[in-house]
Length: 130
Image 1 (cartoon, rainbow, N blue to C red):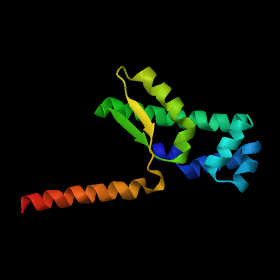
Image 2: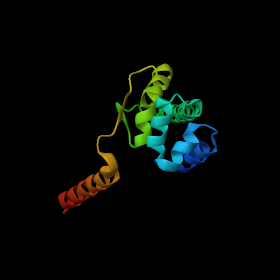
Image 3: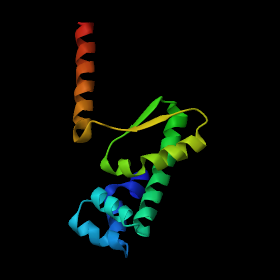
Image 4: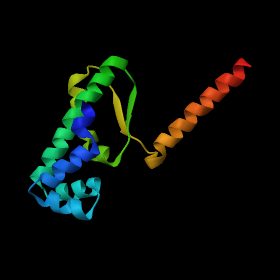
């Protein structure tokens, strides 16, 4: 359900449908760059799109924090840079304990580095058993 609301292709559809500078910027730039520029231009459609994105991701983050009680939640992707502060505010209002929410510093290699880490851990476990 969440992906049907906040997936980049859905956001792109909404951005292209906006009758504002955001729709024009989408043709020349990728979505995060276009949103940054539209926000700089004080485009209300861009602000609305980011508010909706932050609200849905904020609620999902609250659910993760409530269910698993992590000390840290790491977000990966350029779009999160635009909404991380809004997500933090939502989580702070809803979760009675502190939850750190940070943007990943790993960039586009985050998934690959995570997979390598899991593979190493599995290999170490298998070696320890033999």
